[in-house]
Amino acid sequence: MKDQVIITISRQYGTGGREIGQKLAEQLGIPYYDRELISRAAKKSGFSEELFDQLDKRATNSFLYSLTMFGSTGTNGMTLTDQLFLAQCKVIREVADAGSCVIVGRCADHVLREYKNRYDFFIHGSLEDRLQRVRTCGDYELTGKTPEAALEKMDKQRATYYNYYTGKVWGKCDHYDLCVNAGRIGVDASVDVIRHYISAAQA
Amino acid sequence: MKDQVIITISRQYGTGGREIGQKLAEQLGIPYYDRELISRAAKKSGFSEELFDQLDKRATNSFLYSLTMFGSTGTNGMTLTDQLFLAQCKVIREVADAGSCVIVGRCADHVLREYKNRYDFFIHGSLEDRLQRVRTCGDYELTGKTPEAALEKMDKQRATYYNYYTGKVWGKCDHYDLCVNAGRIGVDASVDVIRHYISAAQA
Image 1 (cartoon, rainbow over the protein chains, first blue to last red):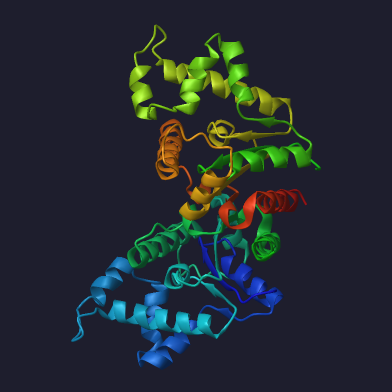
Image 2 (cartoon, each protein chain N blue to C red; image 1 turned 120 degrees about the vertical axis):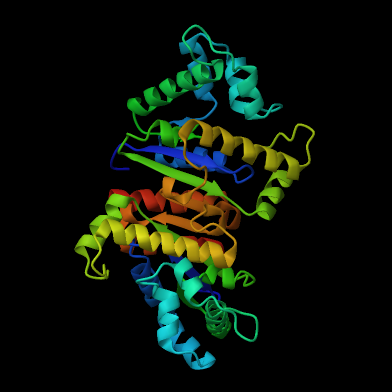
């Protein structure tokens, strides 16, 4: 790869977006960030990893409920949720400043919107393809839900979270350089198509 | 190309989507349909090409105004606009039945939604990239408008037309196999990326 690149990946649940990000980073020989960002943000901010986990996973509560939970403003006039989000933003900017990287989720496309050498990708798939993946691939924690319910809940949470913090619409194609129906072509081919796009932009 | 493919292309104004469709068809050695569909629909239906032109271009009137213009229902209970649209749908299905092809615009992705060997692409670009293209490339009729105004008007018209006839949201990534920011990489590279996607799906 010629230049320094910041790659952000947003994804619907059950598309293999995380795996696409990992393989992309591996093939380009650059760091991959996902959960790692939480540990860093926790260390920097003094908040516990568990708190970030709750912001990040929202596994049992909906995002809006978590806003209520953490919604009382502190002495600095910010809710705890906002403080956690800002601490995460700071870490995202730090890793982007440090060099090329792939960041999955966490509104990174928006957080890094001033970075010119950035590529934003959105990974999606049909309901059928995603259900198939969630059912057969061991990567998904359904926490007692049916695959259908888990999928609907996670997508809704990601959309709400993104729309709340960015003021933009999650999955609206204008925000991304490439939106890929990965359900139809699979993880490896999606990585290829994305690499093809980046190479073309750098040519 | 291994199999028969139906390729539909939707595009924001000023992205070179039509040129992308033409080059794609040329490289794959399959027919390209755009204005040609109007002549065919006119011949088949008995309505004049000028009427289809008005449905298609909506150059001076907004789509909703044209709905009013053509809005009075005939003896079959359909507005003229609806009759024109249905005549166009029929021709779109005929060309798709005849073999591989590229169809630009005209809600073809929705009209052909039951065709399994179909690939749907959406071409978009930043406002700056599109204005630059509209200003420097001779392909765009501004009909007395500033590039900014032409761009806003055409996008709005295409979205209204699409949303009205399909009940879906124009440019929402879920409807497409690939949404390409062509402003960033240009026409030829976009054609490459799209071909790459189709090859992967057929592999």
